[in-house]
Length: 528
Picture 1: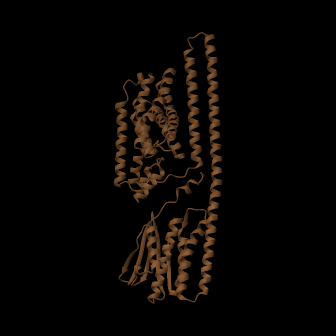
Picture 2 (picture 1 turned 60 degrees about the vertical axis):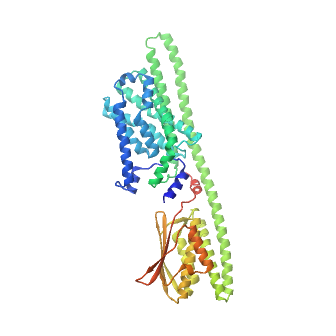
Picture 3 (picture 1 turned 90 degrees about the horizontal axis):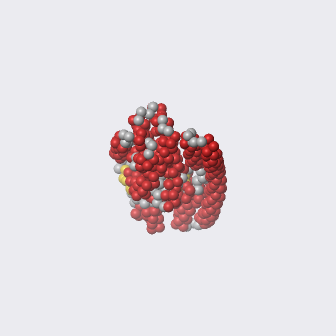
């Protein structure tokens, strides 16, 4: 099982894969050692964030608030934001949101900010984390920054996230009663410092240890698979980014206008009018930029919608082609099966009939897989309850009626990939055929064999109960024995034989690991 998770991690390759707290508690329980250890480590980082707030914030914050360089340096090394952003990428949004929000809320209360404004201030500061979560949830970019493209994407989103979190500086300025000049300094320095922290500190850490963290997660936890990207999430990401940029431009334009008006109070009216007239040009430029942003956002939404429609059409065409291929293969196998049946009817040699029946059952078991794949929309998997039932009925028809053996089937409803289904079907066919011949050779008429096929998470277990003694697979005919050994090896399993002393029968069982569907089938699925 750990090996499978390792493979999955390699396939994911640095994508953001949250580990929700609710999922861990439901899957492993609060008292699981690995969950408890993870929670302890998180609480340690949580308290470090609190302690850093106490010892990191300078006592002369009022002087600091009017110094651009001081604010940028403060936010560049601000520990709660640094820790919370790393927790966001490594574990998930709630792991980073809680320490970031409570630390920021504590800062606000420490400087006598009213409770309602403190709540709003905390939410505004962690808006940047929400931008990261929405965007990385809606895309397939790597947060481990293992290429120039992924790093450039991270820098772009970091800039937008910094702009979003800088809205908290406006709340701070309003409550603290700062002048327009001080507000402008605080606002510019706020997003600059946050952006520098993300790019100069967070980014190198994510690059250096991101993949190691993913391997540790896969080693100790069964990380939930990334959900399919929906159009709703993509639209939310586009709208969030555009909204933040629009608010940022409006804030910059408004603060700049107020700063000019404040500076021109003691200036001659004629000169002031000229400057205000010139400032209107900047206002017009800001509104033009907003219109361009809105147009780009709408264009992005239409582009995604058009791309999704194109992808749906490609999926439809590919599935139609695959269904047609499976249909033709199934028809060819039916043709071969029909020829064998004709030969079987014209043959009077019992040994020849026996071999023809075995060949007919093998071809039937393979052909049934292709029949299922073209009859159902899912081209990657085979419904095993229907498939197993058809194989059991076919073997019972070919051998059971002649040898006096009946099968009682109990098969769970689950799916296997096409390759595993074919291998499993052939192995099941060989074992059932062998059991029928065994019962016939020992003159056991009206024998009833119970077949149980069960699925438990990633394991499939098959049991045959009620086989008459003695029964040994090793004494099977040369071709039959070779096929059984090859097929069990392909499934990476072994056959186990148990003696039931009370009923004097033999039970046979084998278990194998399920494989996930090929990744390219998932990539065909368009957003809904």
